Length: 258
Ligand SMILES: [Zn+2]
Image (tube, rainbow, N blue to C red; front, side):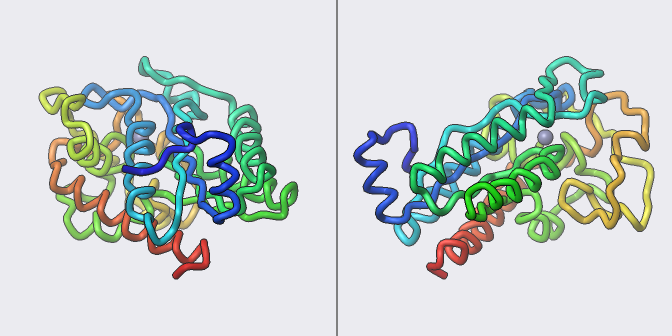
């Protein structure tokens, strides 16, 4: 079991600060993910990833896992389907900045933000730099999609464009961590049809050579871009294991315990 920030008292937090404990802040969002996945898919992944990472780090790196941020910024185009809550990007950045600054100012020196939603990569990168300026402390931002990309690509069954949004990667992870909320009878394949060397692979894994939103390249019908029909719990387990192993390996380095 991961140790939770919210379960601590002021006194035990003081002890954690003195011990150099790492804080982990999982961030997802609430948005449509097609007919087969719940709208809290990203938040659910963030929460499960945070818990697994916190557990994997102990006892080498003492870690406290904070409550997951469950609402964030999505592009307006996502509101074509019910379920997408949009926090304006500036509001989201200010909110995350204040949570992180509070943690750093109370004395925590190491903070890892888990970025589990594609549209947050830019805002969180800016928040990181703003925190450096304000607190002279560099937080770390980890993406389970990027950290698991290599392992996922070795076992995936979908082709290019099969795992952008609500596709094989996310559906497999949900089948692994929360199969009871996945309705595979409603899963449809709607892979990205447009291919370009500049956005080769599935963009949420960070393999884009240019920034170009795939949401404007194809008129989506289902609310997903990808092929969830080939997803499996086994693939989800591979994804989670890789994201946790690679994430833990990095965080040990980040905390000076590599
Ligand atoms: Zn998602």
